[in-house]
Image (cartoon, rainbow, N blue to C red; front, side, top):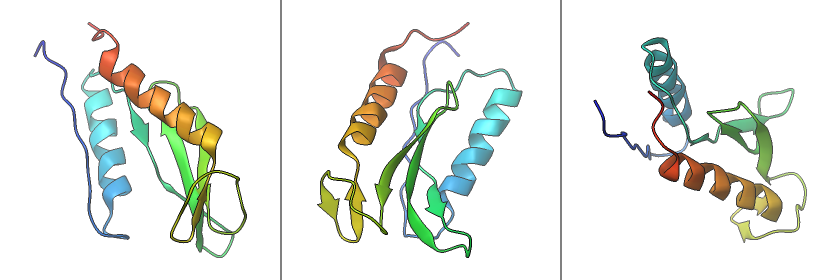
Length: 105
């Protein structure tokens, strides 16, 4: 296949979007596909309570905090989340890079 595939997974909180995305990426990578983009799994405290969202660059495995529920990060707010402006800019760059980078052969 010469054309890159693009996917966006949405659904209710707790339905397993990140779990499915990780499995699909792992399967694709084991089959030799280059995967690029961003995963956004939950950040959890020691008791398992969700305290934020972390971004994971699929190409480099770099991770950055995107949002927290337990402290102010100085960026936009949405519901219980305080977002980190620099983290959002980084995540946007990861996604744009994935969309515009040449396909690995």
